Length: 90
Image (cartoon, rainbow, N blue to C red; front, side, top):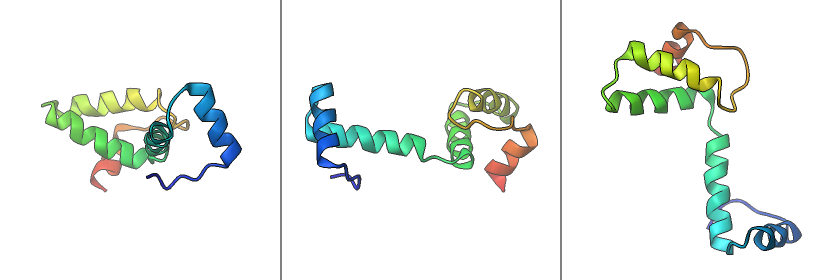
């Protein structure tokens, strides 16, 4: 089971509000936690790898990542191609 601990009343509220069982609730919470705990560097590295596997070239990948970052939860300054390369290669 999940490492997430919910207060009992809140857990019951979620279970009754969304008509899911306890295992589905904790699986959903694990998925959400994983999605929102990702650092921008980690996201860039994972996304770069995924796009490379699709056969895309780095020039295209950098453009895609620049655009995607603007739509994700990583609100902050826009990243340059150089900053994206640094996140990937160090």
